[in-house]
Image 1: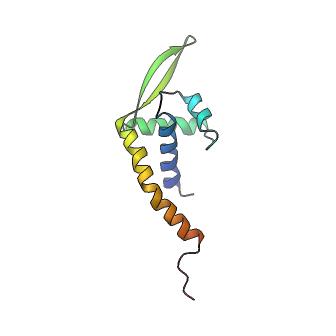
Image 2 (image 1 turned 135 degrees about the vertical axis):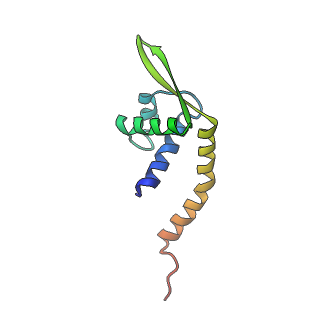
Image 3 (image 1 turned 90 degrees about the vertical axis):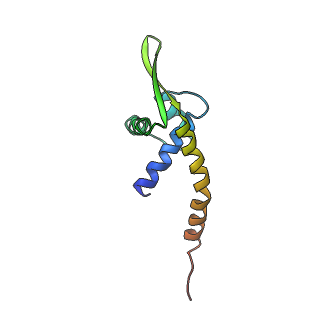
Length: 106
């Protein structure tokens, strides 16, 4: 899969994982496992990129005597999910075109 396309899909998957409630790294990985497996290093790269793009915010809170980072989706992150949903139909159309062999001239 194209690296840029995969990056975009992973970003949206992570945003979707925190859409309904704040979450932390291990839980995000666990929640995404049925869809896609991510390493911690990949996840934290994505989280940093999404934070830089202001699609999520981070707060630290103590949990069992240790600090844990919690990630919260922003309006920009929610908009990105909506954009993905709108773009999805175009992606499906392209997929169908490609898997049906496109327009063949015979």
